[in-house]
Image (tube, rainbow, N blue to C red; front, side, top):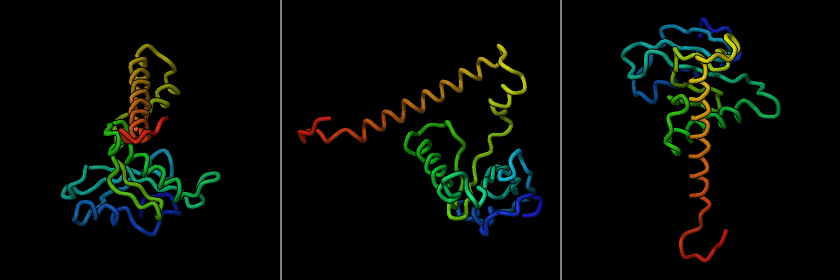
Length: 165
């Protein structure tokens, strides 16, 4: 991947990974490094059936702490799928493609959003930021409530089995 300043990118390319879901060859026209060396914005050709840009995330091979990069990629993949598919919530970026064995995720690009942490760091707490903080807290509450409801549904024994909690 030319333009990427990361020597530890996996053998499978994001282009190959994106080709499968759309059923057509995907062309990455330009790579834009973002604030972490393992997160890039890929600008795609218009004919792919995908958005104009996607986020390509590759965890470093040595992992982070006690977990391997492959394990962390599987966890993030599962979490994104759980939020979108099981909880049916629109609270996280969409997952276009994943290859946990290659430590690679291709995600929906949420640009031009600014990270809440960046706003807080840059501007401090301002009255204008209250709406953003409230929206974030509401999203976290919605995620927790949906997760708890799903957990209760999974733990509930079938009706008439005589099992008690």
